[in-house]
Amino acid sequence: MRLIFLGPPGIGKGTQAKLLSENCSLAHLSTGDMFRSVIEQETEVGLLAKSYMDQGKLVPDRVVMEMVQERLKAPDTACGFIFDGFPRTEPQARGFDELLSSLELSIDKVIALMGDDRILVERLSSRRSCSECGRITNLIFSPPKIEMKCDHCGGDLVQRDDDKEEVILKRLEVYRNQTKPLVEYYDEKGLLIQLSGIGTVDEVAERIEEHLDKKTTGESC
Image (cartoon, rainbow, N blue to C red):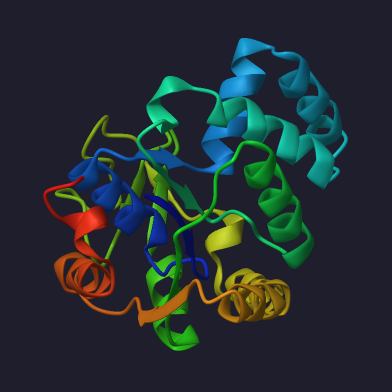
């Protein structure tokens, strides 16, 4: 099965995508991980992407598509994959469809996790990053054993600028503006499943499984 997970910052789509990918032996793909990988490997597309990022510019869609195409050639995607947070815009979705068609592939379902802004702001503003090792801790879901100290290395926990409330609200607004046409695009194609992403990890995972057929979550995984 080939799936796409969409959702605003803080909704937990990465957690759910990873969980389902492990349960069903599907490759978990995120553009962030892909960017880091191709840049570290200094591939042609990686160096090109880095040239834009070093200038503080958005990486053009054509470069993103080249990177995605490269990743889909890896053996671990043969049995299926889950794209986490990609595509982000309707033009990317159309480009992705063209790419998949050229590879004789198609998307089976698009899972869109939804949530109230108030809860998402609370979740994100409770995140802290270790100043030493960079690990993320959530003061609500995984409070540190020692106040404001990283459980892993003992470093100080700090709040990143993009986890401050005013920045979070802007990120949510940008997400809504970008994603509305994207959601409509997949809905018109009959691929969209909209679900609440609010609840425990297990509760949300159960909702997702209820809306996917046995080919995805059962014995065929």
